[in-house]
Length: 208
Image (tube, rainbow, N blue to C red; front, top):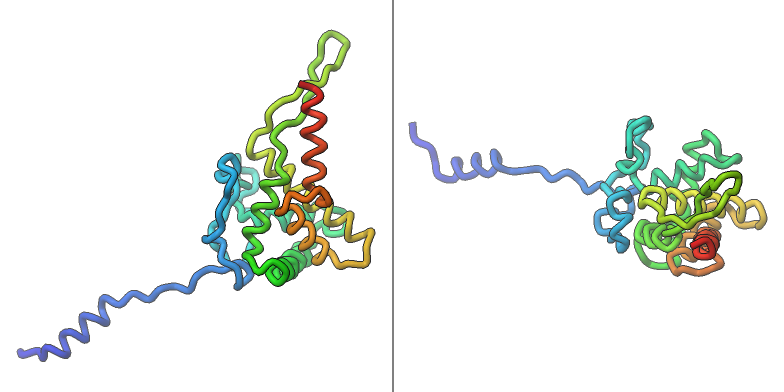
């Protein structure tokens, strides 16, 4: 049997052709793989694995450090859900974050995931106080904060400040979240999360 050279080459190309999967983009728009974490302590706990929809269905629940393997955007959505108005309303919180990212991208012309990460780095305290008991006396003592707790505090303060500011102004919560992310990324004291961080560290410095 004789095979033509062109037919053999065509068959080989078809057999070795690899179809590349489309790149996963957050909300179908933003690439998390290009985001850089400047704080080495937080880098291990900020998950930036590319995903289209930040919704894991709680598969990391009840696992040690399981939340560290959760997309940082989904963790923000979950923290907004922890407040009174958004308890259990995942899709409402999801749409809020998606709209806020669009506003941030329009205002800053940058990747909103990068803005969020920089904001969390600026809002993550490095010191806080604990209470030591000496007999019947309680004495405050400054202690270092673990990276996991630093990120938890930053996310909590960011989402709490956003919900509080939205209830006091005519802006929508998406606009308040976008403003908070931008202010935090600049280290501006008008940001609720950055102001709380400075307060925590100031109290800890006094207790050294």
